[in-house]
Length: 265
Image 1 (cartoon, rainbow, N blue to C red):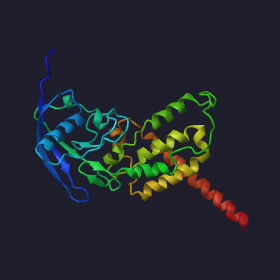
Image 2 (tube, rainbow, N blue to C red; image 1 turned 90 degrees about the vertical axis):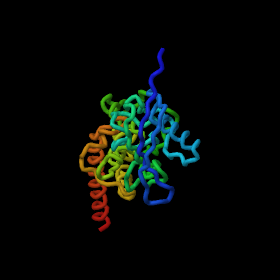
Image 3 (cartoon, helix red, strand yellow; image 1 turned 90 degrees about the horizontal axis):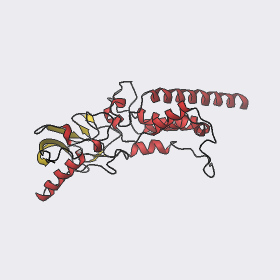
Image 4 (cartoon, rainbow, N blue to C red; image 1 turned 180 degrees about the vertical axis):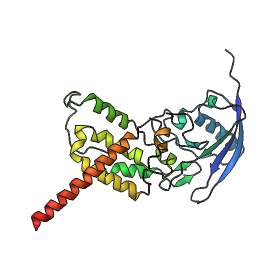
């Protein structure tokens, strides 16, 4: 079997020191890249070469490198996770690029995602949203049988599709408003569609939407870029569901408060 020809690419990478508010694009030429290597393996190779030359390596996030954990968020040639659909950055392979091609690599840019260093951003704002209700707090005891609660297959499938969200934040990076609505709607939908999540559905959606606003995310204006870059292809129909859940919760809470006031009076 003949070995595939190694390629060379020209990288333009955002470099920003920790704690600084400004950064710059820095150019690097890197050769000896196997077309079968992943994009992150190419970045590893670049860092090995930089370290050998006594230069500072490029900081970037990664963990599982299997498209599961959601930590490897990069903007590649202007698109979160790259132009290839339905993948995380770690699933992008260098065979997608031509020998001598120039690739621009930037961090996710959003007010709610401050840059820590180089390509690493702080995405803890997403965790704070989840902490406000992205769970079911009822004590269910031991694990029930799988078919103990009958759930229509259509709703079960929709809930599983929403639960596929890995919280990478690409939807935020792609949105012109830096909205986290697709992420939040997936977390709301995976519980709202199932009977186990019903008891807390009003409190959950109101608290999570409130936290999203506190963290500085923008509002959704239905551009659809979020769905286009999502590595798990989460549908924007979840955003419509989240809005319905939120409006119903607000109305019911308002009516509840009005009833309490009239009763007290």
